[in-house]
Length: 82
Image (cartoon, rainbow, N blue to C red; front, side, top):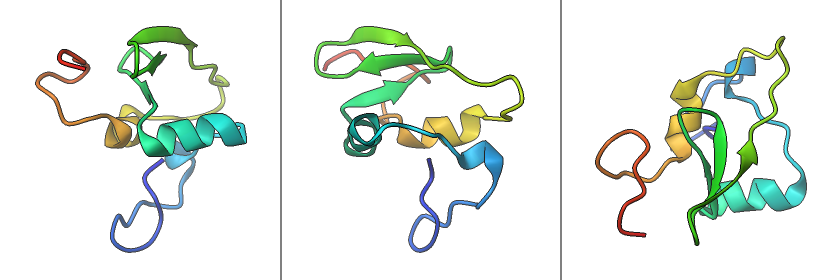
């Protein structure tokens, strides 16, 4: 989620990894969707919840790297004003 290499310097670890289809990968990278603190996938154009992010119990995904993709807005998961 947080890109490897300069300038982002994201770590190459499991906690920083999502497996997405090409369409959802592009939407996440361009700000079309976001994953909130409750692991809900939200379409930012209309603020509709697409659904929950499906995560394997064995995957150690953390909020630290998911939060990297969230817009900088007041509060950790607020989307007011879009």
